[in-house]
Every structure is written in C-alpha cells, then in structure tokens.
Length: 449
Image (cartoon, rainbow, N blue to C red):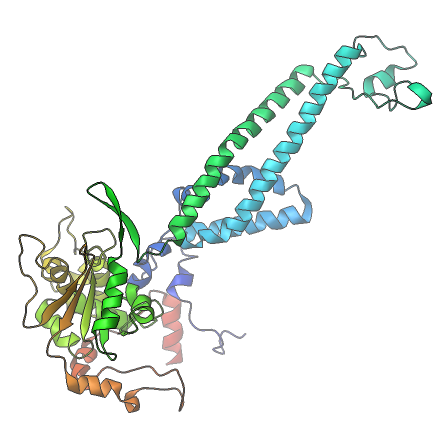
C-alpha cells in the first residue's frame, strides 16, 4: 500500500544485484567495484579459513538444537546466500560461522568424551572381571545395565558406581574414541596455525593502503608515496585548489590533503562520475577543454601496479560511455578498451590517463602535451604523479564558487548540490541521462510522468 504512494524509492542496482540470477547489475559504476562481484567457495575459504570446513556439520547439527538451533541455521543460510551474491557481504556470515564452528566442535568433543568414557568402562570391567562373570538369573539385568552401587566399602559407605558397557560392541566404542581423539588432535595442532593466520589476515585488512611495505633490491622498504602525495597537495597548492582524480581517492584528498575533490565514494550522481571518466579517458585536447572549467590539478595513481589508474581505466571508459556514447566512436560502450589479445586499444593509448601514467617512463618519452598539463610532482617510487591544469578558466571557477549558483534545498542548508558552469552547457546537453537496467523502475518513472 505504501509503495504506490511513493514512500519507497526505486530499487537500486546494488540491491537488485542481491536477487537477480546473473552477476552483473547492468550499472557499470556498481559493477566496477570489486566488492560487488559474486562470491564463491574460494571467497569463503579465503575469509574464513579452516572454519569453513565445519560449517556444513554445524549447520546440520543446529537443525536438531531446538528453537535456538533453527534460528542459527536460518541466519547462516540467509547470510551465506547474500555472501554468494556479493563478496563484500561475506562479513554477514562471520558471526554465524563462528557459532556453527562452536556447535560442530562442541558436539564432537562431547561425543568423543562419551566414547572415551565407554572405552575406560570396558577397561575397568576387564580389570575387575565383572564383564567376565556370568550373571545369575536374579542379577542378570543388573549385570547388563550396571548397578547403581557395587558392594559397600569400609564403614558401610557405598562405593562409586562402575560404568558398564552393556551389550555395546567394544570394537565400535574403541574405534569411535580413537577417531574422535584423532580429529580433536588435528584440530588442536591446527589451532596455533589458524590463530597466526587470523592475526596476519587482520593485519592485512587493517593496514592503511596509503603506506605499504615493498622490497627494493631484496631489501624491505616502507613506501609512503601515496601519503606524501596527499601531503604535497596540502602544502603546495592553494586552499581553494580543486583536485581531479578517480573517485577512489576522494576521501583521502579531502581528509589528508584538505583540498576539494570532484568525487569520492559517497558521490551518488552516476552522470558526474561518468563526466570524470570521460575527462580521464579522452585525448588530452578534449580532456583539457573540460577539465579547465572544473579542476586545477590532476592526481594520478601510477607505478605499474594492479590497482593503479591505468588498470582502472577500463572502468572509467565503461562508466563514461554509459552517459557519453561518443566516448569511443569506433567501439560502442568502450568494450574493447583492452583487446581480446590483452593489448591496449588505440583509444586507451591516446587517453589522458594513460599518457599521464606513462609520461617519461618508457625511454624518457614525453607524452603529456605541455600546452594543456604540466607535471608538478612525482613521488619517490613513481606511485603518485600530479599535474597542473594549465589555462584554468577563472570565469568558470568564480561562477562555481558563487553561493548563488548552488542549488540548496533551503536557505542556510548544508545540502547544496552544485551546477556545472555555463561553459559546459553544450557538453551537458549532449550527455545521455543514465537509465538503470531495472525495467520495473523505469516503468514506475514513466507512469509517474
């Protein structure tokens, strides 16, 4: 009843990805984030380690554990479903996996102790000769089931009861005890290794990505390139400098460099992210024509690493092409940004981000056109490169800084979305408003119009 009244917005691509059969949401921005990829058995093993082995056993046993067990099993199945749909949601199954491992190992321990107790009972009976005597007719039932008291000791005090194995197969009991003790022994021996693995895993997860360890000529070194790049921006650029970069580094630019960034992880505007993607993957002349109205510096993560901007340029192109279809004229959607034989396409080689990444790297070739950009900073190990945008439009910068041009929801509000300067009006008019792939959302929007 509340849905038609507009109390709930359209389902986002992230939410939709949790329920659709395929792994792609259709939103190139969402699909570009590695954590949004589909989970797998390898994901469980990498994040949970040996605990993952106990999950099926703990799940099965919890089904016979009453209401609490049913709740735990339901929680585990639900969290596993979402973890398989999106790898970042593996965190949801962490509490359930710990509880299920406790159920499995606790049950194994109790069962093993019972088998050991029965094995000891066989030994006691063998020593006392109880099991070797043929019981009389009057006491046959007592001999088989075990009396509560066997004789009396000094002072008439009852002796401790002797536990009897009864008719149970001694071979089965001994074998069960052996297997249980063996499994618990393996668990006990693996515990120090598992604890060490957990500690190392926690350190990897918590270590800051802006300061890393590396090896140079076989010697370990602390690489502070990324941190020093942000500090350079803070100490060597004007307070009102605007930094153009891919959205991944937006929070650090704001928090460490204390400078304005064009986008960060909380930028919900798909079209704006596509605008940044278009600037970075366009040829320098076209990129500069846009960037000079929006930014003063360009921050580039380089270094020939798996996570540098060259490796991310494919995502920049895909996202940019979703709003600017003419971004790759010969390749709709920029799907062949990297060719099938794993070589860069012509468009990739001519892109601004690729040329800033490789400027003066290979045989000292100067790839950045000095008419548009000038390199002003390169970190010690080449991980960070910063370029100054030349011929910045003062008119556009002043227009953007004018509070009258912000679209505040009310006077004095902190929520004041900006606008693009008039100089980019023609570009904005040519962009295609991104339509999400959910047909039901588009239908609702069409009905509302």
